[in-house]
Length: 164
Image (cartoon, rainbow, N blue to C red; front, side, top):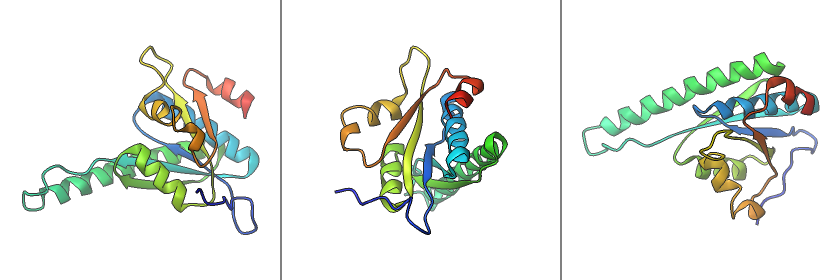
C-alpha cells in the first residue's frame, strides 16, 4: 500500500518530480513543472539516472566508470536546475540515482512523502511517447502512487504558459 502524501501538511511543501534526460521533451516537462510550481508554491525535484559500470572485475574500473557517470548526471542536473530558475525563478532539488529510470523514480517517490505529482513529456515524433511514458502510462498507471501529468512534447512555451 502506498504511504499517505504529506505535501500539504504543516512543515511540508508539495514537490513536482521531473525525470531529466537528453530528450527534447524533458525540457517541456521541466518548463511545465517549473511554471506550475511557481504558480502554486511547490518545489521541483529533478531526477537523473545513470547505468552502473560493466567492468567491475577490472581493478576498480567499474568504480571509476560509476563515478564518471554520476558526475555527468550531476552536471546534467545542474543545467536543468539553472533552466528552472530561468523559466520561473524556482529552485530545483537535484537527485542522481544509479539504475533504471522507472525503478529510480518509484523508489524516490516512496522515500519522499512530499512528492505530489510526476511530470513527464511525451515525444511528439512518430517514435511514440518515449519509453518512460509508455512504461508508466501503460498497464501500471492505475496502481501508480501519485498523479501523473503528461505534457505533449510539441507544446510551445506560450502554450504551456497559458496552461500553467
